Image 1 (cartoon, one colour):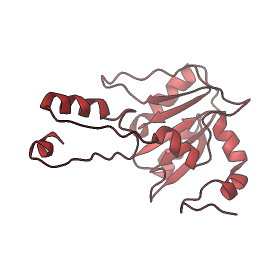
Image 2 (cartoon, helix red, strand yellow; image 1 turned 90 degrees about the vertical axis):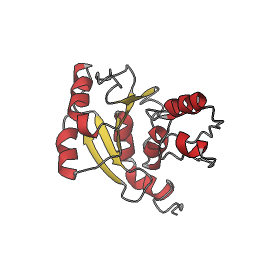
Image 3 (spheres, rainbow, N blue to C red; image 1 turned 30 degrees about the vertical axis):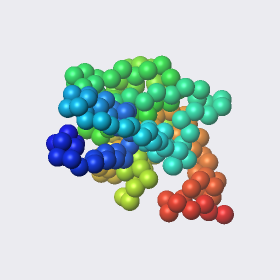
Image 4 (cartoon, rainbow, N blue to C red; image 1 turned 45 degrees about the vertical axis):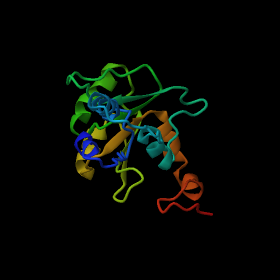
Length: 181
């Protein structure tokens, strides 16, 4: 970005996800400031919220979940992320560390039967979903052979969405971007 901007090009950085949620947004701003390059941030919708919504999974739902958190599987220093005290957790980029993440959920007292949804390439061509539980998510993901990028939603809201899947398929925006009757 900096190299092209210094060459006089107008650089537009598009991120399919959220460059300010476990992305490089802050680092890219620092690089532009250090290089004396003017920039503008145009915020979008975070994949941590839009992808579950696209699949009909609310991150909160009255009587089921009043709080949620978005975590990365690991911190930049490679220490494992802690599981926060909330009802729904969206785990970003957990593909190669899901076993460790699952263990941390169980150590934090989460029920092994807690519903989970792993979503690959949400809203994009190649989108796939695996519905599972904390107890089985590792095996189910290995069997499904999902690839990055994925996010995993953990919480009873996933069970709610699964129970309402038939109704949701009629009202939630379809993968083709049209509303179905």
